[in-house]
Amino acid sequence: MRRHFAAGRVAPAVNEGEIIVPPIAASLPRVPAAVLVPIVLRETGATLLLTQRTAHLHDHAGQISFPGGRCEADDPTPEATALREAAEEVGLDPAQVEILGRLPEYRTVTGFAITPVVGLVTPPLNLKLDDFEVAEVFEPPLEFVLNRENHQRHSLEFQGELREFWAIPWQGYYIWGATAGMLVSLHHSLFDGRAA
Image 1 (cartoon, rainbow, N blue to C red):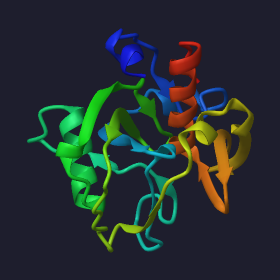
Image 2: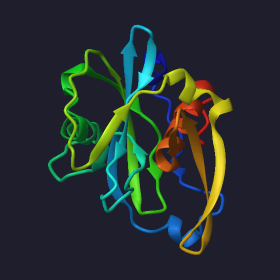
Image 3: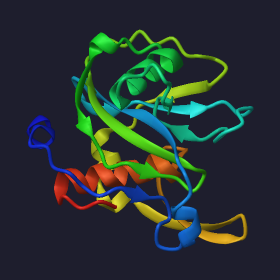
Image 4: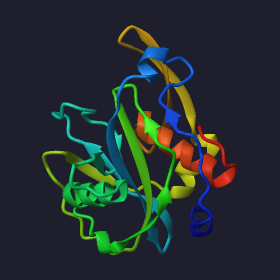
């Protein structure tokens, strides 16, 4: 994985539900954001650190997500945004994160342009959750979430339009939308160099 990101491959941006999103939605201005894709190097095998957002939040309440958020004016890079947000949301120490690189920008139908920043995390983790934003954290095996056989394509109606999205169910958790889409993008980036 280190060699892959060191090679500096560039893949095209990914649009959420790009097959059936109306062209006008794809051209709207986007709010820059960044997330950390934290791969935890456990002795029993690599895992992915994910959060479940609290139910009362205005944006994406109750959903599974990576630590992350909007880019602030004083964040010099998306990497800085991702590390800051991970520290704020789950108490992840930036010193424990080895940044590998970025995945293609992910554009959501809700108006965000998200830069996924992939990092290797060295345990032990002494996490402290922001109770306002994060209900819980969990760690599915990286092998499971990157396995193409576990990637499902679903659709739903949103604001009068049919939208397609990725989903990766795991042990009662429903990983879907942007988070699942970025994991599919990571799979393609690592294994065949194509964006989802």
